[in-house]
Image (tube, rainbow, N blue to C red; front, side, top):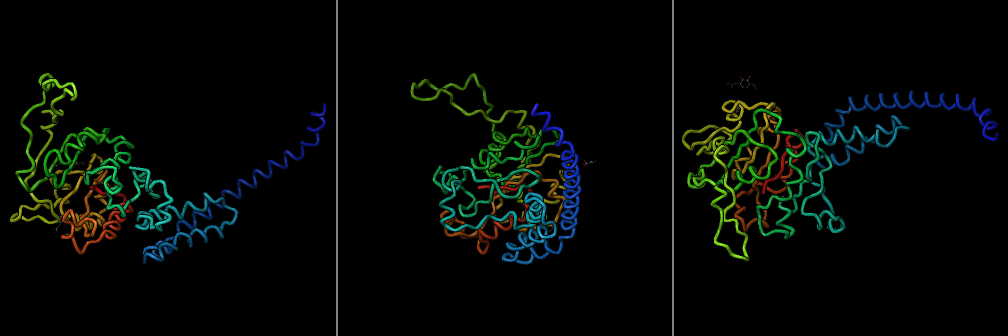
Length: 358
Ligand SMILES: *[C@@H]1O[C@H](CO)[C@@H](O)[C@H](O)[C@H]1NC(C)=O
Ligand SMILES: *[C@@H]1O[C@H](CO)[C@@H](O)[C@H](O)[C@H]1NC(C)=O
């Protein structure tokens, strides 16, 4: 009864509320159009944001402020969207966050996590690790979780192959540039990377280092003299023959320019012309070539085709830093760690899904 009495006067207010809904929809749509307009015409702000580092820190908030005042009623999420895109398409969205030592101490990611935190900008639409420059890009080692300076455990959660299915493509290529021995990194990628590669191309100038293994792994034979305190497996499984047949080794120098005298190969030309790689192939590249990465990556930054060809890039960037002197890194002067971060951030802003390789 009371129910019915309440419903009668409610009728006019119901039509009033649907009018409010229509007006709100029109308001939201026109707000969206306004924001889109500002987004399309924000190139002036973008230019400004690339002009210098200190200005760049202010540019995104300046843009956000303009958008907010233009569409005052827009929700916070909507108004931040253009600013976010703008930041992530420039190098500044990808640079490491500079924080005070108190901020670092208060950050659980800094002391607790073996893996780093996610970066604020995605690359190829996927999450990637924050650049971790103050640890020389070597989290596990710097935080004393491991004694291995080349530990790569922190990269495992961020592999592109675990986010998108790189196995769906017919041609799946792993390029190891500066391979060292078979166990150094080829084996790491064979074991850890979530892709069944159909081709492996490995470059190593020192013929003593990279050799195909001869001994085939046989499980039946893999038994050590029993020792109750030890595991009984004698040998780690090697790379099977069918996989070895997919591998090609090049006793040549990876370089930016071809040069027969030094056995140097222009790796950009090699990938595009000799291997005929394209965006429809899976291409994962590891690069550890003792500072020759600088000119090659500068070239790739200017070449949108390379950002499409290379799905994921792992690169050891060589620079001079006192804390790396023990590893003979003084010879990489005048390159600095800040320049290395800037190069990595630039590559990410151009669409390279790149990780520092320890
Ligand atoms: C290396 O090859 C690329 C692609 O063919 C070419 O554009 C570039 O000029 C070459 N580098 C040098 C130093 O010639
Ligand atoms: C190179 O790859 C393209 C597809 O990306 C293909 O159409 C072409 O035939 C290939 N060329 C050679 C020489 O294999």
